[in-house]
Length: 263
Ligand code: F6R
Image 1 (cartoon, rainbow, N blue to C red):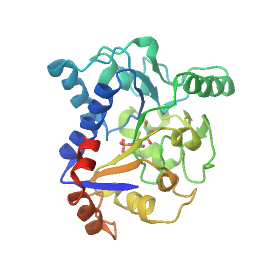
Image 2 (cartoon, rainbow, N blue to C red):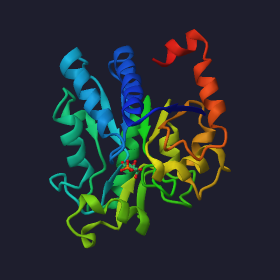
Image 3 (tube, protein in one colour):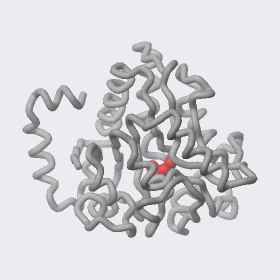
C-alpha cells in the first residue's frame, strides 16, 4: 500500500484526476470503477474539464459504479445514478450503454446482484477503481463485519452512515436502509485501487485502515492485501497516522522512473 499525503482537498483531487487521465490516455477502452459521495466531486469536475479543455476521450471507456440505494430510481436526486449523471455522464462523451450502476428499483435483488457480477466479469476486470471511505471504515457500502470475500449483494446501512448521508435527503425517514453494493472481493479484483479521503472526520478511519490490523470491522483495511492500492489523502485525513513522516519521506524520495509511472 502506498500512502500519499497532499496539502488539501484540491491537490488530492488533482492527483487522482491526473492518474485517471493517464489511464484513459494510455488505455482508451479502460474500465473504471467509480464511487459517489462528497469526496470525489472535485475529481469529477476535473475529469469533465479534461474532456472539455483537452478533448480527453471517454468514447470507449466503461464505467462500473460501486453501489446504489434500494428503492431509489435514477430520477431521485439522492440516487447514485442521478449523482453520476449530474457529475460526470452528462458532461463527457461516455456511452450510456457502457455505464453500469446497480438498479435500485429492481424487484429481484438477488438476480440484479448476480447480473452485476456477470457484467463485471464480461467487461472487466476494472483497470482503475476509486474509493471513498466511511467514518466506520466502509468501502462501497460494505459496512463493518462485511465478509472480506463478499460479492455484489444487498447490505443494510448503519445508522451512522445513514445520518452521514442525511444531507442529501429532505427528511431522515427518506434515507433508505438498504443498498446494493459491490462486495469486498469484487472491489479487490480491480487492477489498481485509489482510496481518497479528506478532512478530520475521516482521520480515524484512515489510521485504522492503513495502520490497524486487517479486520472485517474496518472493511477498508482489506486494501492492505491489494498489490496496487494507493491511499491519497489530505493532511487532515492523515492526521492520526503514526508513520505519516515516513510516507511523506517515501513519496518525496521516489526514483524518477517511478514518479513518471504514477503520473
Ligand atoms: C459511495 C461509496 C461510499 C462513500 C463513502 C464516503 O459510492 O461507495 O463508500 O465513498 O460513504 O462518502 P463521502 O465521500 O460522502 O464522505
